Structure formats: structure tokens, C-alpha cells
Length: 232
Image (cartoon, rainbow, N blue to C red; front, side, top):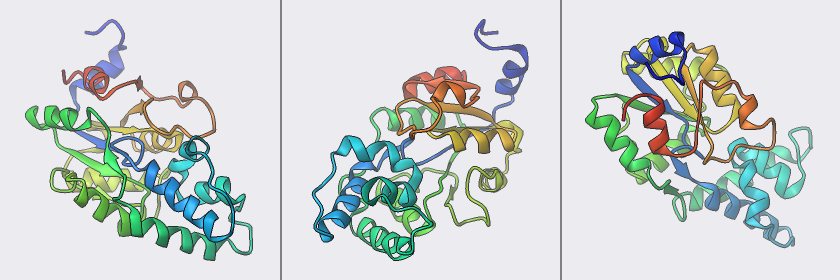
């Protein structure tokens, strides 16, 4: 038994049968295209571009987060819905222009497959975007399932999409791990009864620090993820 893992968690690790991943900020770096769409939105309104560093942390919050930082518009604003539609259309037109799989992710997925460990994707990205992005990046063909933000009636932090992914993989939720870069990923994973892993290479948002999310593990690299789950 690893000295860094308690007995209860060690038992859960021994029963691990599948690994589920968030998409943006966990498997792929989509920030350049999302930030690009936000700056296109600003340019169309005669505003100068924002620095990438200002936009990147809010990528995990989707259109809502990008509108908040780029135009200071919240869902309560009268123009929120048309601005959201404009942003999403601009993003859809460029969503594979600069987006790429994070370095070391492909070797990590190779290791899971070599260990006969099924894996899947659970994202809050609507299927309209999640399916073509994962297909274009070569992930859809490898994943056991891809669950979008509108696949079930609820999105994360609700556990429903994670439970649906486990169901599609034919694995009980308690035998899954969920891996993500946002606090709501950890909230959803815990609610689903899964082992939870927070990845420090992601976008992380502007809320509580990653150490406060309550994840079973915090990892800095994909290789460290494999070691934490005792798969390497």
C-alpha cells in the first residue's frame, strides 16, 4: 500500500475500472480558440483585444465566463442571449483552428489503453461543439463515450452526466475516477461517488484554490495522474 494513500482510498483504487475526463483544460487546450472568439466579439464592437492571460482562466466557464471577462456581461443583462449566440457562432467557426491536445495526454491515454482501462469524456461543452472537436482531434475514436453538456437534462456540477458515462461504459460509478480542472468537476465526481482528480495544468478558474476543492488527488502532469491512480 502506498504510504500516501489511506486504506479506504486504496481499496477504491484497487476497484478502479474506468477513468472519465473533463475535456477543455484537462485533455485539450481550447483556450486559444475560445479567447480568439471573444476578441472577435470585441473587435466587432470596436473594442481592442484583451490579453490572452486575461481570458484563459475563464475558459472553463464557457460562454458565460468569456462574456463576463470580455464584455462584462452577465446572464442578467438584456443582451446576454444574443451576445452568447454571437460568441458561440464565432467559436464554432474556428473551434479547431488552434485547439490541440495537451502535451503528454496522448501517452497517458496510450497507457490507459495498454492497461485495458476504459476511458471516456464528460464535458459541459454542448454536443454541437464537443462531438466535432473530439472527432477532429482524434479523441472520439478512442473514447468509450463522449458526454456533452446537453446529453442529459443536467450539466456539471450535477452528477447526472458522469453517471450516464459510467452507464454507457458498463461500469458502476463507484469503480470510476473523474478527472477535471474545475471545482465543479470535483463536486460532480464526489456526488457521483467517484474517485476525483484535480489537474493543475488546466484553467482552474478564479474561485477557490485547487487545494480547497476536496479532490482525492491533485496532479501536476498526465504522468502523475497515472501514478496517483496506480496505473504506472
